[in-house]
Length: 304
Image: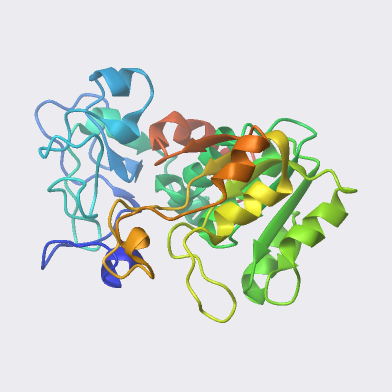
């Protein structure tokens, strides 16, 4: 929500924000059969019809029917993602409720953990999926915000042998260590050198970009390609990079003309030479949220 709030994305005046929603059902429509009044539910931030070609293929983040503008993908309380106002309100209407809502156990158990299922935990997990994290892999994550931290947790769940997390905020890096990662403070240390040294010169197998187009150094100077460039340097030849940080097609306050047009220049030459593979895009929450809910219930994951 900070992107539109800070004027980095154009949006309708008066629009209700809030895309990470969880609550209790108070009313259902006549076409709803699976969800009942009183159910505690998690609401994926992306809204999907459940029947189009992309939804059937598991890409609910690119639903072909939910956004009246014709752009693939719809969601709550976010610009360009349809007319669906967000959850910073008393009530939230959820179309296609049977398909979109994830039932949670009754009561208040795991309340903080379950709140992460609407976006942050699945998005972090999606980053590790795009990066192809396998048991024994080494992983570098740029960004220790909520998504980066969930990527670190997800990498551990998937069996990564070593996880490096790069950020400039000490409090965030402390949380990264809580999730079993090696924290690298980019304001005091060259992260490329630290990761190279930490892998005996080989570099990591996989990387996750969890910052996006508002990346900046510890002095506040913005460079939307900074994190991508860092990952290109530290991921070994033929490795994979998952990009789940937000990159918009337009950024009115971008630091350069190219950045304003959603075209940050990064080290594509080195990426091509090393044969790196990239996976990008918004997380299809429904692909992961049931699995992640069950990991929480079984005590395997504690994202909150």
